[in-house]
Length: 190
Image (cartoon, rainbow, N blue to C red; front, side, top):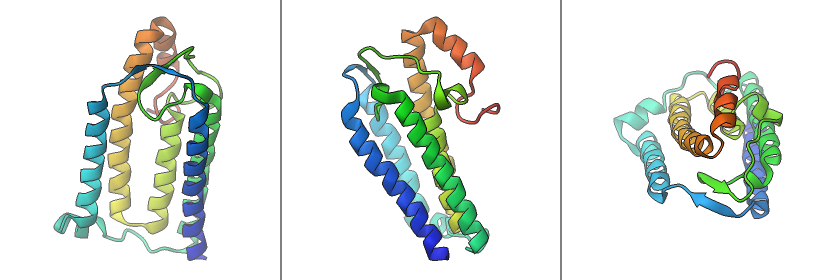
């Protein structure tokens, strides 16, 4: 059963990847892009953290510390959390429609979306991805998985701040009101 839970989580990530590739063809034309160096810097920091955790000598040994054993309960809990994250991401991506981009951009005819999961969090795609990674960390029960989750959280928070500056510039009043009503990543918390 423990193998099934790992395969289930892998399938969730596969569905996410396939949908993202297919849906990328249905986006609107970009009219404003972020500085590409910011994106490269973010990727470099994330890659460096990953390599340190996996191959960084003492740090990688520390990150492989087992917090709890893999059991049917942790496997099922990991599955449920990962599936919830996938559902949230897919729902958010469908609602966002042609406004979506993998980088920080402003699209032609861009809309400020505040329906669907965007009623509860400003960045539900990021929230869903964090849930998927949390589910994986719960399944494996290793400290490194939670450190990777923390690194991903800060990387997504950095990107979300860039997006929010762009949205505030294009929708000054509406975005300020939206930001005051809706939390960034965790409903009613943060």
